[in-house]
Image 1 (cartoon, rainbow, N blue to C red):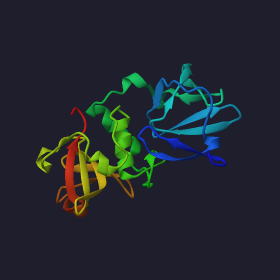
Image 2: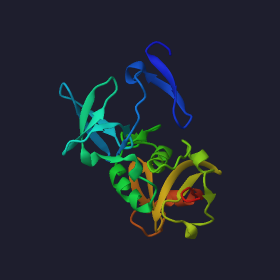
Image 3: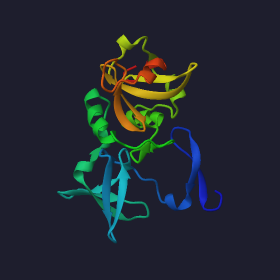
Image 4: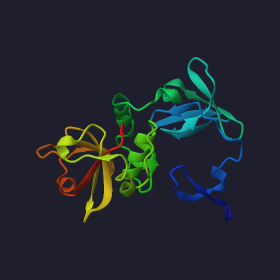
Length: 219
């Protein structure tokens, strides 16, 4: 610790500083559910609402008809709409489950270093999207390009394969292939564009800077 800041190590090995006021020293939370909407609003005592981003793990301790009761840091409790959360055991990887995630993250602003629905950079989006279904990927695009197995050419690309771009063989951007050469990536915001010539959303700059492709699911 240094003053009002604490140095922390994240699950992916990245290190950084957090303000002490944002850290709870209570007993560790044992999560039961995951937030599945872009943001979920939690109502807590004192008319204070909390906004929790998608992918956050929470501990549900009570289940009234219209809302769930969550355990909050410091021993407090808050209420959240039932539609915003799912049990952790109900989110295994499957292509069909990826499509609702796309709808939730689309339009999220670009944020360098961002890896939540408050803001994403390109590799943060990829790490978040696959991590949501239990597929752990490194934080940076250059390391993500070593995961899984290679896809040889554009004709062999499958849904949800990763596509990497850069200059002089140095990778500096990554996208998720959605099929028919459409890609989901963080560029200005999270958006769907295309590597297919003639498409209204064609990105010629990305096609000419294509470096490699990888399959990281069902390897």
